[in-house]
Length: 323
Image 1: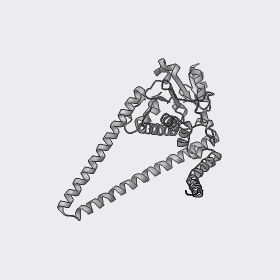
Image 2: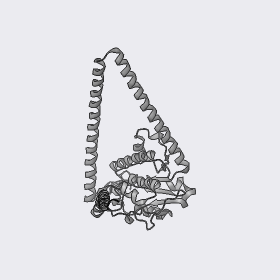
Image 3: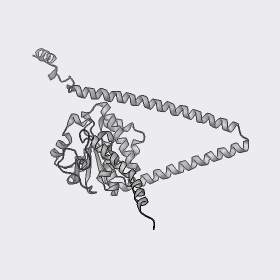
């Protein structure tokens, strides 16, 4: 009997406990996208190496110039030049230190009084390693943009574990970030705030007109959403939490779907907190390539009108007779 069972198990790998779970087959379109992403990452790495090499050569060139300058002047002039350079370096260091202190102060204040924005990282099992890397880069950009804001939000990373956490830990200074990091899901970590959770998803029927400081807005940390349409909406509905979508269609038309990257959504929210103007926020953040040609033409027309306005006013003033 044991031998028969073993034979059946060997002939039918699907029921073998030692067999790894079958990986979902990618469609031709998904394979093309993956190949395109891999080529992009390779090109990006090549560009990064080229920039690094250029910086190294530029540093060597400047060092050589400095040595030649010092060699061509008197001892007294050399001492003055060195002291002057030390003073400039000290000023730069003091300025950086002051900017960092101001940034820390703003981010600390945001923890108590800022808008809470959550990035949901529970989708890492649906993404490739390359896609997770792309999301990590978006999160890094989110933190940088938020830190530069005069009134930053308070950022959360929930469901931060596994490969996602491992890749985030590789970022320089990640452990010192002023950000809430939770291995728990937002539902578990914020049980007492469930009624204030709002998942931002393009599939929602509720339009986000205003931001409420009492609410905690959730951005789905998912790359290539076209492969997982409606996933965030379904998740929010199953959890019984509110949903909302950005009022993009009220101000512009996108050339494809209304899916934006994590950092674009965050930056739009931060711009709105600064300006209280959705249109300004969308036009300043959403890249031109994602907008329809009609929107592009309208933007160009408005730009030409603004340029022509002074000349029209001048023409009118020329036509007015002097007294």
